Length: 199
Image 1: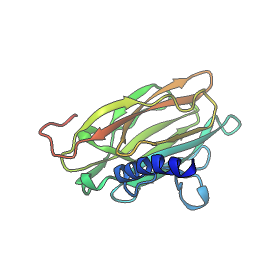
Image 2 (image 1 turned 180 degrees about the vertical axis):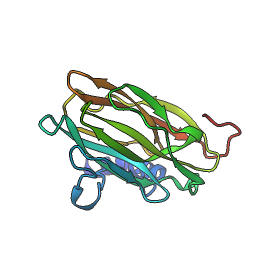
Image 3 (image 1 turned 180 degrees about the horizontal axis):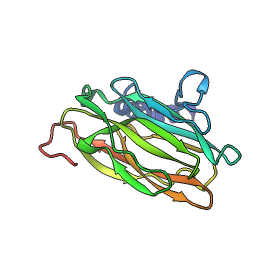
Image 4 (image 1 turned 135 degrees about the horizontal axis):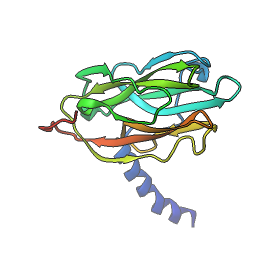
């Protein structure tokens, strides 16, 4: 019976390994000793190393610390089929206390975050650091579920699917809870240059 199961499942494992190569998504290394990239009520700037993109976001909420969050991010190299980034930039600032929706312009992928805390609003403004890979274009885009599931909860968003990339996010802000929920915009990227771009 054990030999039979081995003969059935070994080819499946081999096919799956062949499809995904050496890429293992999760658990993610969030940096040295899983330290946070910020302290409560302070600004921060986080950028992935050159050629890498954000693949995981973790955060914990504290009401007693000004309804603020600690943040941490994990990066992984973009697929070799995308090549090296051809340019990187900071997107426009998304203001504190408002709902917003933003994708990286120029078909870029999210490779970092910058944020500043505003005590008068008990919220943060946000900016994406984006990188463009040649003239690759997004397709098969979708929104993740809300992170966190409820205001005031911890969040841990991970990209479990190989070859999907974060292109942006939409957020809602609760004036009651003074917290945000995020839905990340996730897309695949073409393996070829395409003749158009988004703005």
